[in-house]
Image (cartoon, rainbow, N blue to C red):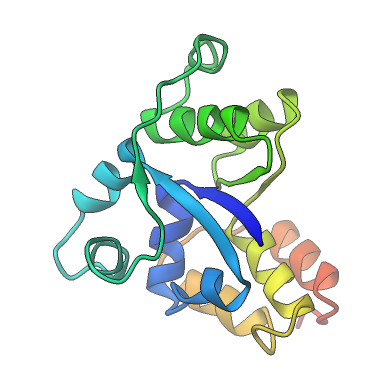
Length: 162
C-alpha cells in the first residue's frame, strides 16, 4: 500500500470535484498533519473536505514537529508539516499543490505530486475514466490552471486538448 501525506489544498480541490474517495480507490494509506487538519477545519461548514475530514476520512490526524531545515524554506504551516512528516516517514509521498512546497520536498528527496498529478495517476490505474472532466470541474470551481499546464496534464493523461 502506498503511503501519502496530504496538504489542505489537494483535499479541498478533491472535495470540490467529488473525488475525496480517490485515495481509497487507489489503495492509498496516509496521514494528515494537525496543521493541515486545522486549515481544512477552518473552512465553511458545508465544504466537502471539512465534512470528510471530520467524519469519513480514513486517515489519522497526526502531530508533526516541523524540521528546522524545512522551516527555513518559509512555507506555510501545513506545507511545512507535510514535508517534515515525509522526511520522518521515508515511504511517504507528499500531495502538495504549492510549487515552493513541492520544490522543498524534491530538494530533500521526497516524492511529491499535486492534485493534477493525482488525477493522471488515477486515470492510469483505472480509478477514473478521464482527467478532462475533473480539470473542467476545477476550472468551474474557480481554480486557476494555466493553459500550458492543462495541455501538459491532458497530454500526460493521453487526452487531447480541445
